[in-house]
Length: 198
Image (spheres, rainbow, N blue to C red):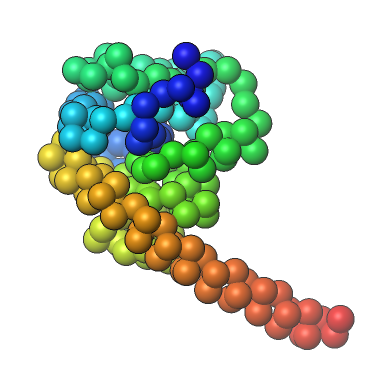
């Protein structure tokens, strides 16, 4: 079935063994919490969950997002409404899929950046300080992050449902913040050019 035919909303998910390896917490509890939350989001909102592997490393099973994605789906009740993006995709193609989502839940930092930079309501599963800093820039730490050590299906489903229910307002707020971030980035470039005398 093509993604275009899948019922909406589309809930993008990026999971990784890295989240618990570096952030603490139990890997099985992490997978169970994500599975339970995605089940609850689908039960409340309908739609389809699309797991987007951001790192694929066949020679290193502990660093292959496809494997942990499939493990999460096996733990879901609504597994028939979830799929793992398979195949070999370019960065642009992955970003395009992420940008089509109505909500994105991500443990991989670059996946959450890809989502937020396109105005997709994004919930970061934080295992390091960088996730908090990034989400502070694009929306609100309390609304858009959950520490992997504190992750429960209930908390994740509650935050995800809030973002879905207010997705237009959230997307507009993110877009406004991104405009400011871009303006500051261009100003930094101008200042560097002035220092270099160009």
